[in-house]
Image 1: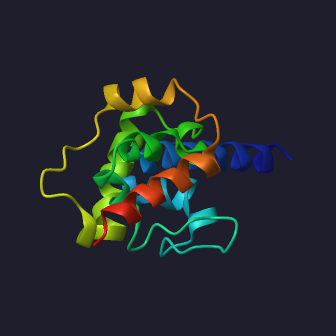
Image 2: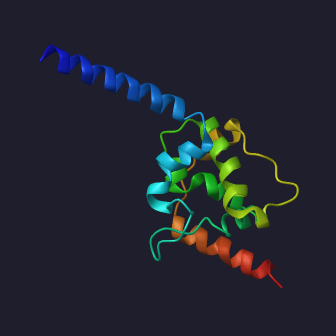
Image 3: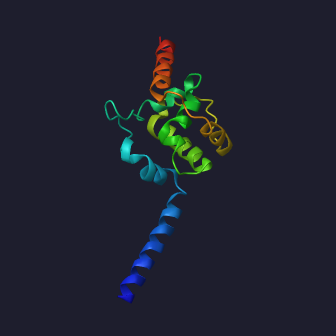
Length: 140
């Protein structure tokens, strides 16, 4: 019995060390914190989860879009710290939507993420709809 308890403790400590080390990579953070809903390819789940692939960076081109990406519930409420969220967004945007990245994109910072996460969106669906309308109005 004692040996099995020791093995369980060693396994738990090893897993905890792996999980802590894993948070150093934005790709790993995506896999652990985002992929459950958005999938490995950043795909849409119709009516439930919006696509990241080929669309997420478009929000950077309209007023309020940059803040929106930090304030959506999945981003705002993740247990990742502010710098890890900034790193994740800075990886995620060009990874899933390089074609729509603004040439003058300024990477998110931990300080910016901290300030934005302090404010909840009053209505996520309505905010998204307004941003999409602004995007459509910009498109010739």
